[in-house]
Length: 470
Image (cartoon, rainbow, N blue to C red; front, side, top):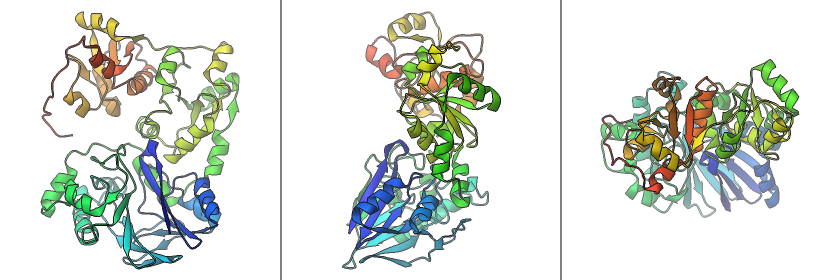
């Protein structure tokens, strides 16, 4: 028997490959399915099952393409009603895989169809729990997402189901079982996930706040307190996972289309496509196509795309470092942005060489900032409120990137503002987005809050206790 976690850091997502006696199962695969097919070929195995723990919100699963290419059976837990052929397993059903078995445990709470898959080895011992978004390391799945799709599924109702699922289905299992969750730290599917991606169930029983002795009402309060609004693309990804989607091959063919600078400009003008520049923030600041938005591919790319681009059907034109275009189209498709329509051949250098119009973002370093702050200039901190409350530059105003439409109301277009985040990634997203909306007086602070604090030149606040929990 083989069990492998296939972890994708940019989504903080864990897929799993299980093999026994030439039969394999893949749990919660990503959109690009070739790596799973190649992995099975390496073992000389046939992929028999594609097991889906639930209808995912934060990414588009590869279940449909993987089943089509391998003949595998897609399996969901009870109550799932997909628009495509799948086996809807009953609670407690055993799936045979070579010499091992996988037991379906219906664990509603994160969503109503949420299920865990319990691995039983050839000796009949329960050894692993693929817990999906029901149980994370250090946390449990948030129960407020399904109502974005079905209004009657309130977070209170779902939290109650989650309480029962954890205590009746998961906590009675043996302490030595290994927990294999669908996500780790950085995912928006929970609020307190550990950076660790596996653990024993016994250790989670001892340390996970949600598994401690408490009443159902106490549990609801614990789980629901501190949740922030999820990215706007989540409900649309759920619907894609329920209803189906274009093949990843078609998406890559459409997006992996090279355009000369002239053709790129024509496509932008004719389609109204959003120009997404995925280069490093520091490179973007030195020169970019006017009205383009910077979300760097080497940062927390997919979640910020989902936050900043509300319509997953938005046509997108890509500016990238040459050679990374297909990677970007793929990573957009992972979160449901299937309508990339081409990329700038030769990257931004080709645009400049063609004599096309170029814009820049003004920047200051911490030495220049010190004099500006002394003069009372306006400073914006675009980190999350929790980060701001922890510590910030004195007199800086909090304008969180993740609520940019609200934050925009704080800004007077006729005044100059100096903008920082933690290190420069989010501040460039913020500035480029607002610059495309006509806010021309935003200046980036190089190095962000880290550089401000490390310089020792500025007064930093101590912890400020928030007046409300967000």
